[in-house]
Image 1 (cartoon, rainbow, N blue to C red):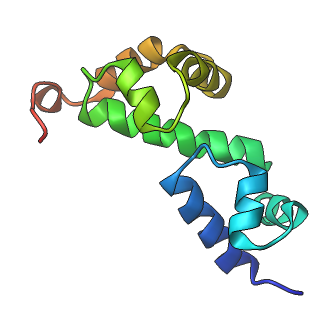
Image 2: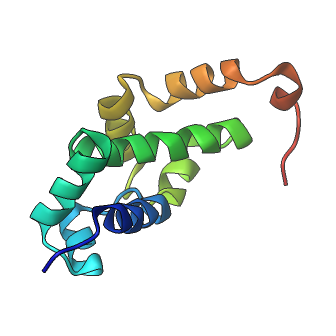
Length: 122
């Protein structure tokens, strides 16, 4: 069966935006395509592999959380993102960014304009 790589990549991206912890196996089952097809589609669209793409999606979500709620506890953030424990979250962040979650938060908050650092978001 043939697939439109652009449309399939959009579906892959949407699934990972919803839950960046989805494995290749879970995506394959949800989208009803082979793991190989997903790998090829991601490679075609990004030039990289599935794992790096998924880690990038995760890092964007983490940075977004830190930008909006810089005071959020790492434990709460890890649970909100679907991790089983803060330590598994910390390992994923360290693998993807080279920094621990606290360092990444400091970096992200340091990039915010001064007015946004003190704003409250509800």
